[in-house]
Every structure is written in structure tokens, then in C-alpha cells.
Image (cartoon, rainbow, N blue to C red):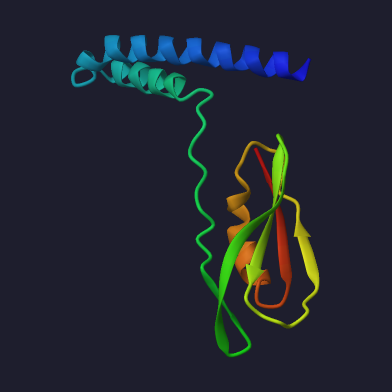
Length: 133
């Protein structure tokens, strides 16, 4: 049922984007001379962005300072499922650290929004994060 609803939403968003493109093309020639045309064109551009997904940004954490030395960090996929990946930020150290699981919200945002939290926790913790697909 949820997959059917998701497919319906995706199909409707594609139609909305198509209408937005058409309206934007119709209003674009008039935006220089008419304030309402600028408003309509802006609304059409918002319609064009409906339902778009964007590329997943990188975490960008290559190293972290542990104690007084810089330690390389690598992302390791511990478990991969159709709905998510459990990522481990592996550090090249031999010291046992407390494990922390960061559970990213299922709000449609990428888990990389928590990269600042990961960066702060890495020096003192063994960090894992859920990365939903």
C-alpha cells in the first residue's frame, strides 16, 4: 500500500513539474515588464521543483584528531538493506572507544545533515549512523 502511494505521489509530482515548466515558459517573456508575471513565473518554478530529489552530499570527514594526532577516517558499510545502510566511521586506532549509534530521522533528508554531530563525536566515540535510502 505504501509503495503504491509513493508511486502515485511520484507520478503526480512529474505531472506537476511538467505543468510548471509549461507555465514558466509562458510567463518568462513577460517578467521584465510585469510584476504579476514575475510572481507567476516564480510560482511556476516552485512547481517545477515539486518532488525533486537531490544528490546525496558526501560526509567529507577524512581525518579526525584523537589525542594529539590526526587519524584517518573511512566510511564502511556494515549492513546494506533495500531501505537503509548502517555506516561505520572507521578510525585507524587501537584504543577501545564507546560505540554510538546515530539514528537519522526518516524525514526525507539525508543523514549527511548530521555530519557535524558525527565530526564532534568521532574523537571520543566509535560512531555508527543509519543512512536511509
